[in-house]
Image (tube, rainbow, N blue to C red; front, side, top):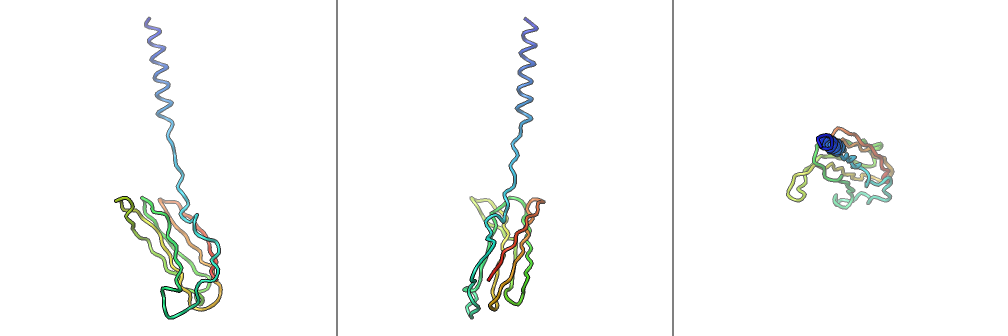
Length: 128
Protein backbone atom coordinates (compact mmCIF):
# COMPACT_ATOMS: atom_id res chain seq x y z
CA UNK A 1 0.00 0.00 0.00
CA UNK A 2 2.82 2.40 0.83
CA UNK A 3 4.53 1.74 -2.52
CA UNK A 4 1.33 2.65 -4.38
CA UNK A 5 1.15 5.92 -2.45
CA UNK A 6 4.81 6.61 -3.23
CA UNK A 7 4.29 5.93 -6.93
CA UNK A 8 1.16 8.10 -7.00
CA UNK A 9 2.98 10.91 -5.16
CA UNK A 10 5.95 10.71 -7.55
CA UNK A 11 3.62 10.85 -10.59
CA UNK A 12 1.72 13.79 -9.13
CA UNK A 13 4.95 15.68 -8.41
CA UNK A 14 6.22 14.92 -11.92
CA UNK A 15 3.06 16.34 -13.48
CA UNK A 16 3.27 19.45 -11.28
CA UNK A 17 6.93 19.99 -12.23
CA UNK A 18 6.10 19.74 -15.93
CA UNK A 19 3.22 22.20 -15.58
CA UNK A 20 5.32 24.61 -13.53
CA UNK A 21 8.15 24.59 -16.06
CA UNK A 22 5.94 25.33 -19.07
CA UNK A 23 5.82 29.10 -19.22
CA UNK A 24 4.31 30.90 -22.19
CA UNK A 25 6.60 33.51 -23.68
CA UNK A 26 5.06 36.14 -25.93
CA UNK A 27 7.30 37.84 -28.46
CA UNK A 28 7.13 41.61 -28.58
CA UNK A 29 5.19 42.91 -31.54
CA UNK A 30 7.21 45.02 -33.97
CA UNK A 31 6.14 48.62 -33.28
CA UNK A 32 6.88 49.60 -36.89
CA UNK A 33 4.93 46.78 -38.54
CA UNK A 34 2.11 49.13 -39.62
CA UNK A 35 4.44 51.86 -40.85
CA UNK A 36 4.26 52.16 -44.66
CA UNK A 37 7.32 51.61 -46.87
CA UNK A 38 6.30 54.24 -49.39
CA UNK A 39 4.11 57.33 -49.02
CA UNK A 40 3.33 58.89 -52.37
CA UNK A 41 2.36 62.50 -52.96
CA UNK A 42 2.54 64.15 -49.57
CA UNK A 43 0.71 67.47 -49.82
CA UNK A 44 2.73 70.20 -51.46
CA UNK A 45 3.99 73.05 -49.29
CA UNK A 46 1.33 75.61 -48.50
CA UNK A 47 0.90 78.26 -45.86
CA UNK A 48 -1.42 76.04 -43.80
CA UNK A 49 1.00 73.77 -41.92
CA UNK A 50 -1.64 71.21 -40.86
CA UNK A 51 -2.29 70.21 -44.48
CA UNK A 52 1.29 69.30 -45.32
CA UNK A 53 2.02 67.06 -42.33
CA UNK A 54 2.11 63.28 -42.32
CA UNK A 55 2.47 61.41 -39.05
CA UNK A 56 2.87 57.90 -37.64
CA UNK A 57 2.31 56.58 -34.11
CA UNK A 58 3.42 53.19 -32.76
CA UNK A 59 1.22 50.86 -30.77
CA UNK A 60 0.99 51.66 -27.03
CA UNK A 61 3.43 49.73 -24.81
CA UNK A 62 3.84 49.21 -21.06
CA UNK A 63 7.62 49.69 -21.18
CA UNK A 64 9.64 52.70 -22.27
CA UNK A 65 9.56 53.64 -25.95
CA UNK A 66 12.47 55.58 -27.45
CA UNK A 67 12.19 56.80 -31.05
CA UNK A 68 14.75 58.40 -33.36
CA UNK A 69 14.55 59.41 -37.03
CA UNK A 70 17.01 60.22 -39.81
CA UNK A 71 16.03 62.19 -42.88
CA UNK A 72 17.94 61.62 -46.13
CA UNK A 73 17.00 64.97 -47.70
CA UNK A 74 16.31 67.83 -45.28
CA UNK A 75 15.68 70.23 -48.16
CA UNK A 76 12.51 68.32 -49.10
CA UNK A 77 11.04 67.68 -45.64
CA UNK A 78 11.50 68.20 -41.92
CA UNK A 79 11.10 65.21 -39.61
CA UNK A 80 10.31 65.42 -35.91
CA UNK A 81 9.95 62.60 -33.39
CA UNK A 82 8.76 62.31 -29.80
CA UNK A 83 7.95 59.67 -27.21
CA UNK A 84 4.51 60.25 -25.71
CA UNK A 85 2.15 58.76 -23.15
CA UNK A 86 -1.39 57.65 -24.00
CA UNK A 87 -4.11 56.58 -21.60
CA UNK A 88 -5.50 53.20 -22.70
CA UNK A 89 -8.26 51.65 -20.57
CA UNK A 90 -7.25 53.83 -17.63
CA UNK A 91 -3.56 52.86 -17.83
CA UNK A 92 -0.68 55.01 -19.01
CA UNK A 93 1.04 53.50 -22.05
CA UNK A 94 4.10 54.70 -23.99
CA UNK A 95 4.17 55.42 -27.74
CA UNK A 96 6.62 56.73 -30.28
CA UNK A 97 5.50 59.34 -32.81
CA UNK A 98 7.10 61.04 -35.79
CA UNK A 99 5.93 63.78 -38.15
CA UNK A 100 7.07 64.57 -41.67
CA UNK A 101 6.43 68.13 -42.85
CA UNK A 102 7.18 68.81 -46.50
CA UNK A 103 9.09 71.91 -47.51
CA UNK A 104 9.34 71.63 -51.28
CA UNK A 105 8.66 69.04 -54.03
CA UNK A 106 11.06 66.11 -54.10
CA UNK A 107 11.76 62.73 -52.51
CA UNK A 108 13.23 61.85 -49.13
CA UNK A 109 13.71 58.64 -47.18
CA UNK A 110 13.03 58.61 -43.46
CA UNK A 111 14.73 55.93 -41.36
CA UNK A 112 12.93 55.32 -38.06
CA UNK A 113 14.41 53.42 -35.12
CA UNK A 114 12.22 52.49 -32.15
CA UNK A 115 13.56 50.91 -28.97
CA UNK A 116 10.97 49.07 -26.85
CA UNK A 117 11.90 47.14 -23.70
CA UNK A 118 15.55 46.90 -24.76
CA UNK A 119 14.80 45.65 -28.31
CA UNK A 120 15.49 47.87 -31.30
CA UNK A 121 13.40 47.96 -34.50
CA UNK A 122 14.25 49.89 -37.69
CA UNK A 123 12.27 50.65 -40.83
CA UNK A 124 12.58 53.11 -43.72
CA UNK A 125 9.87 54.93 -45.62
CA UNK A 126 10.14 56.90 -48.85
CA UNK A 127 8.17 60.18 -49.01
CA UNK A 128 7.41 61.92 -52.30
